[in-house]
Amino acid sequence: MSRFWIVNIAFVVLLIALYLLDVQYGLSVVWYIVLIVALVALHTAGSIILSLQFFIPTRCKGESANAIAITFDDGPIAGMTDKILAILKEHNVKASFFCIGHRVAREPMLAKRLHEEGHLLGNHTYWHKATFDLQSGNTIAKELADTDNAIVKAVGVKPKFFRPPYGVTNPMVASGIKRGGKYTVIGWSVRSFDTVIKDRAKLFQRVTRSLKGGDIVLFHDYSESTLDILSDFLNHVSKLGLKVVRVDELLNEKAYV
Image (cartoon, rainbow, N blue to C red; front, side):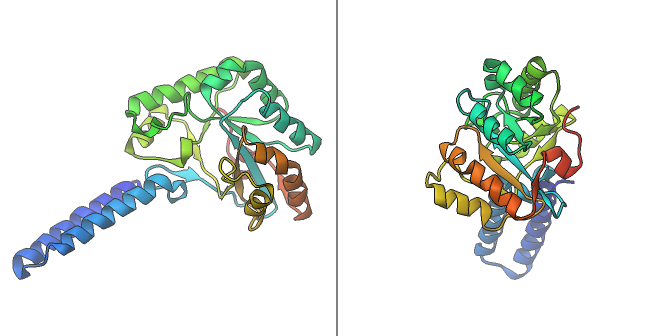
């Protein structure tokens, strides 16, 4: 049973208990308001904090003491992803790329290069719209399937790993994921915010200040600031005595169906 249902059941039990106390002692309406506000707060936190696993089980961290995984969302993007690949190759590092389906369909050779160079491809929805999580479970399931099909057509493998856009989940997203029947939801333990942090020094500090074994680091293909620090970041990882592995190796799970 998900934490979403556990919280809802607890809410109903508390509401009934509150009503019975109200009948007997005449409680203030404030108690009802407090209970409802608490429920809304929990649902909101559960929706936007993926690591809470409120709606769906999620892997956000590995157990390794000497390895981390780096991930890139939103590609493949010509002129950007290929630059990232060049840096990774220079450092002999394998990463994980959570790809947007329509971009894979537009850049199949770049997706194929990702695969041929030993990197992992995961599902990151077909359109990655801001309203993704407001769609029905059926629509979400179809979007995930369309992304799988684009990746299969480009590289010949069907991804098992899925990362929700913006890390947002809700009952519809959970329903769409479950309808696929095979996905492992992947989160992160270090979020770079490289889409908003443009200062090179600040970004480097953010992703290195508490880095440790088992971490999954979130970057984005299209971020110029990530390109600026990626080589230094990988050198820093090496100085810490850590190695970079793919997410499937870090979590000891199969990457493809």
